[in-house]
Length: 525
Image (cartoon, rainbow, N blue to C red; front, side, top):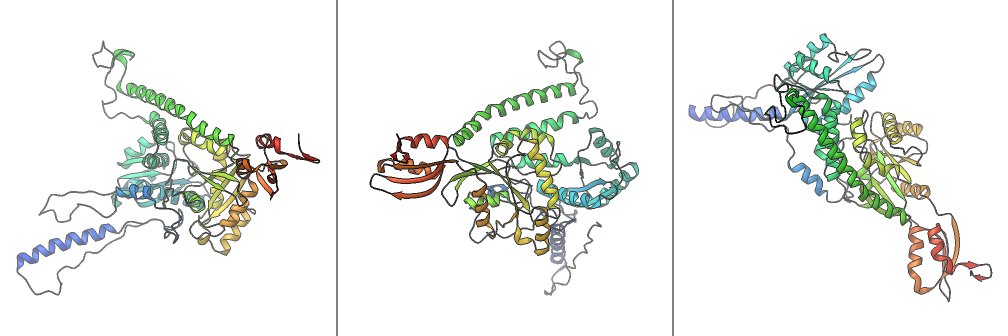
């Protein structure tokens, strides 16, 4: 995309009475400064807002998402595009510059793979913007395989360098995971920082992680990514850092005078990773205790899974009024949120909002967040949320199901829900229905399809199989409450001796009702 050319503003004709030359010069300086600020506020835009997801939507009138205090806190320190201390006229004041990171995206696609590559590039653009950058341009190259040296090839790398200089970019982002040698070679040619898709996703996770466990998981993933990419600059990584004999203060356990700085840094990273793994392991009993409590109370669980920015948190808020943070950004929420709800017939179940997925999700994150993804593997039903307005919903379905298979949850009953149905027309709905015939169309913003969704969830939840008929004394109303919470009450009546209940229950509930069961001839012995 060619950079936008902005013409300067004429500040001489103001329509005011003529003033002296000094005042006119002062007005010219102020006008030039204001004109420069207006020009910088017009960001470069490579892709339309609807390419990587739905366009920003107004909040629902009934405030289904709650007060969103977490969103206010996140936006309180957000960098704002267009604000800068850079001035064109440097004769009066010191030259200063403060701006967002400006990036150029690059990618490689084989013959016939252009549509998929463009969708992936749009998604990378949304990732970069979520991480806090301004996307200036995107370049795609058609070749069978990436160049093993510079990813693009020597000639295209030089073209990229010229494009970066013309746009004034300071970062290049590759739509893949670059090998350390590729990144170094491309940086040497282009002359600016080069990162890959994995680094951008890790940066977003580090910004959005809130809980202690989430921060530890993200740091572990970052260290695993950094370890093979440690790079020396001049002599900074080749200095001798020996033990006490060497006098470098490394202490006991080092390799003596022969241990270089880069080896010492690798050892420190390994030690930090070991501590983080131990911390994450120590947090596991607390999660297991909560799950065991739900299993002991026979409370079914529904895990909300789906692509990032598909509307999982919005759907949870619409159903339970949970007030979970909602934002039109990728990976807005990372920590699992569990809320309780009940079916129309009074059965309790839990809804769990899990971390979103994305194509080419870094394996470091899958491993680090495995403890969080265990909520998915332990669920009774998977509520698979897909963005109905996304340009490639089939890819979303495939990506999410691949990750579900990695965590061992492929055999769990699945209900596919196309969210943001208010943004999909009749033709789009027909195509989506062809992808998943048994799916449901809902809208967390307008409330469309929510009754059908809850009815389908009620049918998919595990139902107790033991049929009981009991007369419960009126002083044991607690047992009636247990039947409503854990079982399925089929018929309820009132007799002289107590409450007559016909219900489907589990083994534990049947044991509690044993003294009050009704046999063919009366009360069972």
